[in-house]
Image (cartoon, rainbow, N blue to C red):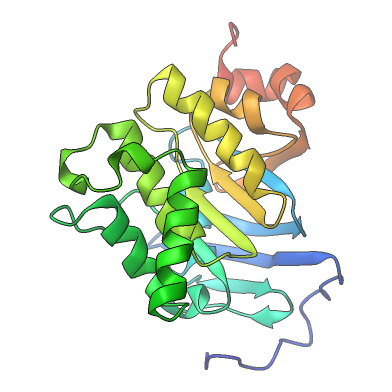
Length: 252
């Protein structure tokens, strides 16, 4: 499908307050259905967490909406524009920030240089420097601004990678396991950062860490066997017996 292609007349209409929608999103790998007819909506400045056991389809769904996979069937709409099959850089050009598990960073450059280079895609030189400095301050990275990225601790590196995502002031942020491998102190810091993001952006978080989910989430979408099992407030999800059986475990 061409970039900016016409919307399928059979697809469900997107509502004005909806910034991201998928209609019948399906992804097959040979005979395996990794995403199965997923209908999903995200509103402006909404935070949504995606959870599910390994192989449930949440990561495949994330890759389809972020441009890493082209869906076999179905549609993706962002602010009314169909982005089905777009590449990640095309989606980013709409004002979408994407953090994958393998971000494009330069270990030999400093924290400031990495974030400045990301800012330079959106702003002229001087403004990019101001923007990079502002993001470094917000992420509490000033004390290591001159340090090489390759020398940082994991939690610090994760915050820098998040800085690369938000420096362009995106209206939608897609985060794939932002708390993975972090200490409890780093996770707490990340929770505050994501909460602050929702002042200006809608945010989707794919995550395994249930303590982290509890600390940030309101609405949670649960994936199971490629489909959406349920969608509810985090408290309802955590107490649901079906979710506990297929994912959380009886002691969760």
